[in-house]
Length: 340
Ligand SMILES: *Cc1c(COP(=O)(O)O)cnc(C)c1O
Ligand code: SF4
Image (cartoon, rainbow, N blue to C red):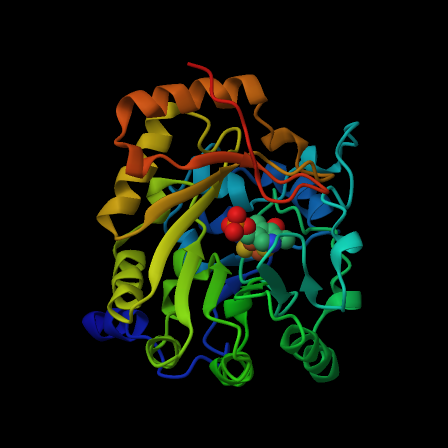
């Protein structure tokens, strides 16, 4: 029976409808499951009021019980520090509201646009720069999506659409299939990029339906997954990523440099090496966006540069992520100087 349960967990549903999602939303439950001190519950509850706690059960299983400093736990447990007001950290650090030609589209860089597919995520990363984003004003009702697609059809210089959100894979396969068909019908769009943390935090999301729609699309698929620590990449994640690769998806990774999670050359090197093992190349290492509630994750630029220098020493060039920051008004990600 036990074996059967394991098989049921690792075999993806052929068509994801979200109903199988098993997510922890109660801070008390998370603390109990992980054998952590209940004394931190009031702070966890207070910090979760603005931006609720959300942790897929399969992610929680990768957290070491009894360790309040576990780097995976640190990314998902709401904490008192989030409630502190820190100068320089505000609610819309990227001034995204200025780059939306139509609701649901974010057009900052030449040739590629972000299409916001949903406001929802399966996990709430406490450092998330979209934690205050006014999703309701941008979220794709059917009419809004129609208007966004119509706008795209008129922009012949755009060759790549980046599905974003929220997490674009948190919608059903049926909706993704409809969206893909609509994008395929626009001749100048050649590449489909999906920015998703789901293959890492909930690998069971990589359904047969998703794999087959990506394998059969006219659009060349690229997926940028989002792993911050080698311990996130367990066997189930490795299998989901291998299945994506077999379906012809180019896999890249972006991480965020996070104090207490991965601000250590050894950890970053281990992440790059583990990524390679599971068929993913490092792409970006982001300096944190200065969003209110995330100041306790910040790493200084000077320290980031030192970490990169050390990584450079330890890793082959193709396993080095580019250290970047997203800046309002820039024509692309800004590369940060690396000392050395
Ligand atoms: C990050 C980002 C992109 C993609 O940038 P690449 O350098 O191509 O990865 C596109 N549009 C927006 C608004 C972005 O934030
Ligand atoms: S998955 Fe991405 S968008 Fe969603 S909470 Fe985490 S960082 Fe933010």
